[in-house]
Amino acid sequence: MQFTLADYTENDSLQSYILHAKVDQDSIGLQIDINSIVAQPIGDSTTISQDTLIANAVRMYTIGKQSDRLIHLLSQRFGINGEKSFSNEGAYASIFPLSKQLQMENTDGNHKLTLYFPEEEMVYAPMLSLTIDVTERTATLAEMDVTNRERLIAILSQ
Image (cartoon, rainbow, N blue to C red; front, side, top):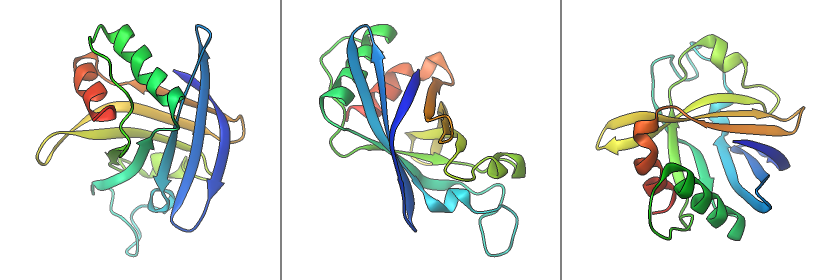
């Protein structure tokens, strides 16, 4: 799904993005916060290593009715029954900084990340790809594997 970057703020601890999109006359959206450690270089002794899980590095949470409509739209597209709304607590994703190349793309508020969500204790599955381009004021969320659809909706709507 393609979103417009409606707002972007940054401080010492995180980068925060408000995303909006229009789908079939409905406005959908969510907020995504990315921990500032994600923008640090890999491999340097004072930063994260290349094979370390960065737990809860990304938080996705509601901006109200637009987020509820996002969950409803995804549920419909995925063929998942039931009235669900976006979690008030938000959903946390973890990342692995898989390469220096990936990390170099995380500059000036721009990100290209694979988001891992827990499947069970200490087991993570890559469920979403997130690309944010502050310059173009766009963001894209794409599913990684159709077999995770039900789990993804459950995580976002807990």
